[in-house]
Length: 218
Ligand SMILES: [Zn+2]
Image (tube, rainbow, N blue to C red; front, side):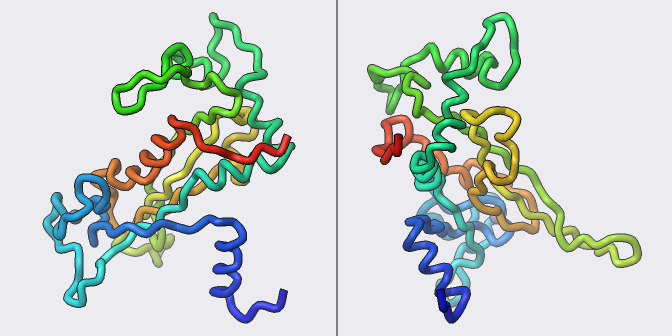
């Protein structure tokens, strides 16, 4: 394709994939994100720095990449569908822990009915083979630190948030191509209220509990 700029390429990719980042304001020191109970706050409840500058623009932003459209896209590929079936096809011994799926938390979930707003649903967690189990991982990464004599005195860290899909076989689920980035919490300091940055993911998971109509290619 004869594209004039990276911007145009990005917009075409956005339209074709129906995947658009959601943009949320966050504290200038990245203590927290203005989501959920903090949505209408004008100062950071932790360090009291103002949310907006003099031109009423947010001083810092967090870009969140939704997970649902990417999970839905996996069901368009028969090979990926096969890989996602690992969770239901694997044979497990109740006396052995061979995978995170054998752990107490997931075993208890598999035995309980889904609850939404305190209301018990007629289906259990993991009852459908298309149910997806996700693990969230987030840790600080130092950037611009330099090495040796060039080592900078100020450390700048950022915090990538990533999703591991537990349905996939353990041998591949942590490979780069199968790990989805949700976004990067901007630095320079570590987030003090991580849950406020996880709020968009939490909303998506609530949709997942109800079930998300998805085209299944097989
Ligand atoms: Zn703050």
